Image (tube, helix red, strand yellow):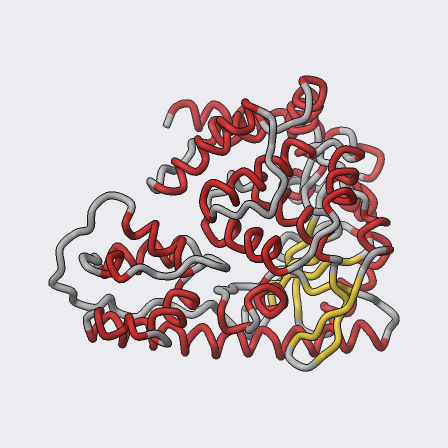
Length: 390
């Protein structure tokens, strides 16, 4: 089951808009409170609008909000037809994802394996009110570390194969150093991720997984009751996810803004958790992005000038479609760590801690596991040399 492809772009004989007007429109359509100004639709470049909406994973929201409002009459017919086609295509794809998620969750449940559907259609229903309003390409599930092996065995019986197979004896090392395993269905080609942590050990981010499962709640996805993170723990997952991806997509900021706007959050709990696990500044960065882009004042204001400057920088990158280089991406992540000690730990972990790529690059005997560290160091040196030469 592959993600829906974009159809042929519509022909639009309109003037290219002034700087950032498309970004402003995308912010408006993904805002929990902001109204769409007709002035934003006056000079829309259809091709650029669709390109940016696709990049930011906002096509379903764009289609829904424009086509269900009176503003649709201000847009070219070709654009409306294209948006309608994209919405229906995403609807069919997301429905298929939900049906498969229900099948997998039910099978795991019968075997005593508890899982949280994470991101994708489940997040769309929780935050946006419908699985049809968020672009989803795969399925993500959060599991306890001790359940990953059994869940993977069940997936194999259901037609899924590991994207990067590893020997069974490497299981403990993978659970310690990685954060997810990827599987693909042999017939539908659907990609599925089993996750047990929000980030791999290479990024040196602590997250209290026991707390996540103790505080779990339930939600309804396509008529099925499923386990879900509490809103406060979901916020932590979202800010760490956005940080590790350099906040390079608007949908990630929009998800966070919608979560903050929708729930009465326990901010003391959130800040205590972030402080205890040393991602307070990562949290401040995510909240700073929400305030700068969506102008929500419900989140506590950060008092950290370097983080404020970093949020301004990342907002500018996002607004002007500036892609950070590999080195800049790591630099920005380091700037959001709580102290120099945590920066040093992240650098050390990044250089010396093997991940899934190393564990699947060569099959050593079990007694030679430390050799994977050497492969990691060699790979980091090669990556940095290649990126510096670009």
